[in-house]
Amino acid sequence: MPAQINRILLLFIVFIGLFLVVRHFLVPETFGQYGHYRGASLDDISSREMVFADKEDCYACHDDILEKLKNEMHAGLSCLICHGPGGAHVEDPQLGNIAKESGREFCGRCHDINPARPIDVVFQVDIVSHHTEKKNCIECHNPHTLWEGME
Amino acid sequence: MKASIAAAGTLVLSSATRPFDVLLMASDPPPEEGPWWGIAIDITKCIGCGLCARGCKVENDVPEEPFYFRTWVEQYTVLNNGEVKIESPNGGIDGFKHSVPEEEIFKTFFVPKMCNQCSKSPCTQVCPVGATFESPDGVALVDEKYCIGCGYCVQACPYGCRYFHPEKKVADKCTLCYHRLKKGLDPACMEVCPTKARIYGNLRDRDSEIVNFLREHDYQVLKPHLNTGSKLYYNGLSAEIS
Image 1 (cartoon, rainbow over the protein chains, first blue to last red):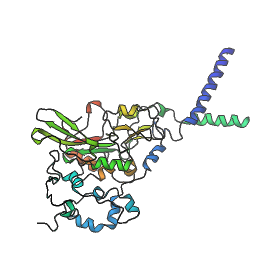
Image 2 (cartoon, helix red, strand yellow; image 1 turned 60 degrees about the horizontal axis):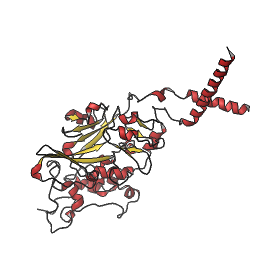
Image 3 (cartoon, rainbow over the protein chains, first blue to last red; image 1 turned 60 degrees about the vertical axis):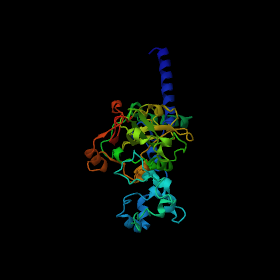
Image 4 (cartoon, rainbow over the protein chains, first blue to last red; image 1 turned 180 degrees about the vertical axis):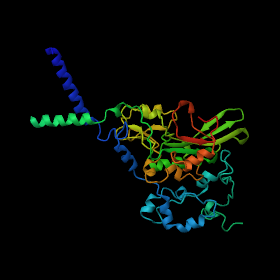
């Protein structure tokens, strides 16, 4: 083989070798494990912290409320809808660290009358004019036992 | 000298044994087994409470300012004159107040939006570094450590479901709460949905809730002409919705 070809061949081998060395450091360990991405990122993403609790944890202590709700219109609703994420409360159950949302604004999210809201899905009232002598909805309607003590 | 040559040799060898083919593939074929997640949203059940959008931000550390959303709710109002008004005040997080006089309304309804978890997703195909991808169980995810923040994927999504995270400086999107999914829990938005208007499930399991939903409803996907392989199926999708 002519000398000039040998020199170019050597150059090529050096460059390819360099490329492989650089590539070794730049391509992450698990890249290509499942596809064109870092396989370890699946674990990164699935190990993120949860904020909303598992609602089964609620029932572990509050099974009485679950029982009460059975025949209510609010049956089947997740506790976390009105009681917030609840992660802190599950960790350390105290009275203070769980949300208890109520009031015309919050209840109205679902129950305020709105033409876009399907009438067969949710009970609706005009939250502005409905029993204005009372401030908070829960003064009459206990969210756990909606019609208790009412006519 | 000998040791360094040996080290270099090992490096070259170990580099050569790493798979090359995966670097050339544009997208990955669906797996043959395991779950294949899909979503179904029933528009006829959505009451526009906005708790899904609010819960999502809490669960996933999404910036509070408007226009950073992984999921949001739109209110479509078709007026008597045929005009379509689309509103989404703060993504619906604070709920909705009706803004159009009732006598002018032809029809009106809420449409929850979120990532369509496409199986031929345009967003993952444009990523220049392989930082966004479809997981083996069919969820489009972003690798935060690998994303260079070029924003191509944000532009590529025809549904506007990605945003650029202002603090992390990476693209961010709905993960179908992958961290909850893997523990067998519902995604935050579905956990707090009071009417079960959104459900998810394994599309491979012929007995799952979602497959039964698809069996019983006349479902449709958004922008079917784009052939994105969307796995978000809507029931009650009106022609005005895009």
